[in-house]
Image 1 (spheres, rainbow, N blue to C red):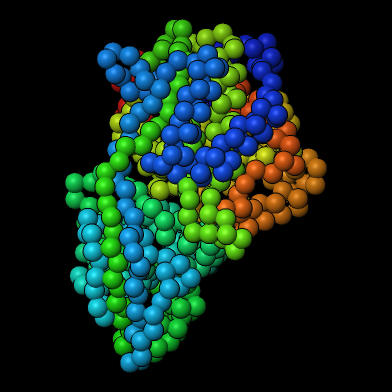
Image 2 (image 1 turned 30 degrees about the vertical axis):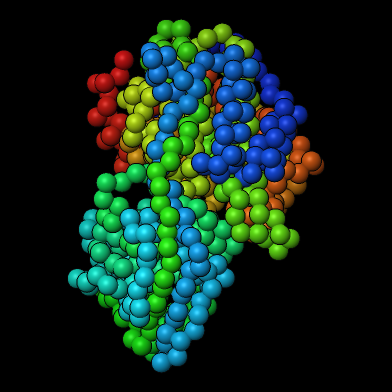
Length: 549
C-alpha cells in the first residue's frame, strides 16, 4: 500500500463535513492587503514604526475574529506575540570601494556596481587595501557527492569570488540534481562556507537566470538594514565582507587577469576545478557598520482544539517586507510589499476568521505571522528553534507566501519538489475544485529554501509553501506565466509592489477554500503526515514519533 494511501485512510472527516466548507470574501482580502501595503505601514520593516503598526493590526484582527493569544507565556498567560531577538546591522556613511586591475584603479559604486551588505561578522569597521581575489567556482564542499571546489586553498586574507546556484544549473545534469537547486546553490550557504574557511570576504557574481531575479532585487535586498539571529561567534557564519557584483564587472576583472569568465565557469562545473587567483586584480574597501540587538515580534493566535489541544496544525506567513530603502526612478522609497507578503497575511487572517466561526476542531490550529523573512527566514527560524508548541506534536505547517491577487487558476503549486504525504493529501483534496497539482516550474530557483516552511521542514515537520496556479481560468497558462514574469521583473522587491485596485482576489478566495479544507482535515483527524521514505527529512520526523501526545 502506498504511503499516500495510509495517511488518507487515517482521516476522520465525514463526506458531509468535507462538502460544506466556509466561503471567503475577496473584498475583505482586498481590504487587508490594501491596509497592510499602504504607505502608512512604511513597508513593514522589522524594528520600525511599520512593525508596530503591523503587529497592532494583526492582533486587532485576530481578536476581532474571536481567536485566543498563542504567543509567549507571561505570568502564566499567553501573549499575542513571541519575542524574537535579532542582530540589527546598518552601514553608516559611504561605502568606499576601489578596484585595481592592470595597474589602474577605479572607484566602484555601492548599488549600481556592487551590493555590499552591512557586516554581520562583529566588526564595526571593515577596512582593507588591495585584497587579492580568488575564484572558487561554485564554492561547494559536498563530501557525499565527492565534490570540493577549494582543493586546500587557504582563503585567509582573500576575497572569494563565487558563482550563484549549483554546478549543474546550466547543463541540467550532474551531481546536484540537475536543474533543481540544492542548498549548496543558495547564497546563504556560500556566505556561510566562505566564513567557515576564514575568507576576508565573499563576492557573489550575479547572473539573472541562475539567481532567478534581476540586479534590482539584489541591490534592494542587500544595501539596506540587515538582520541576523543573535550569534555567540558571528565570524563562523559571516566573513567581514559579504557582497554581490554585476556580471559584466566580474567578466572585466577576469579579462584583466588574463582569464575568460565563461571558460572559467565551464571548468567550475567539473570535479577537477581548482581555485584560480585573479592575478593583478585587487579590491580595497572601507565602510562602517552600526550593530545592535533589537527585539522583533512574531504574532501568534490559536483556535484551541477540543480533544487534543497540544497537537497543532500551523498556518504560517511573514508579515514583514523591506521597509524604507533606496528610491526607485520615480523617487519612491517605500517598499510596500503588497503581493510579497500582504497577500499571504490577508489569507491567514481570512482563514483565522473562518476557523473562529466553525466548531472547535479536535486539534489546535495556530496562526503564525513571522518577522524578518526577508532577512533570511529569521522569524520562522527563531520559532523553529524555540517552538511555543513542540515540533514533535506539530502535525503540519501550511505556509502562505506571495499569493496571486488575480482570478482563479485550474492548478496550484508548492515551492520546490519535495515529496511528502501532505502534498498527496492536498492534491487529492484539490479534485473537489477541479484543480490539479503543477510541480514547481522553476526548481532551479531554490524557492524551497526561500520560504518560512523550510526551518520546519529541515527539522522534520511536514511543511509546504502553497503557490497560486499559473493555468488561469481566463487566459490559460499564457496569461498566468506572463503575469508572473512581469511581476518578477518589474515589481518583486521593488517599491512598485503596491496595491492595485483592479485586483479581484477571486482566485485567492477560491484557493482558501482548499487550504481550509486541508487544515480542517488535519485538525479533525488522528493522522500524522510524513515525508516520503526517500526524503532527507524523513529521519528527523520518524525520530520524534515517540514524543507525540
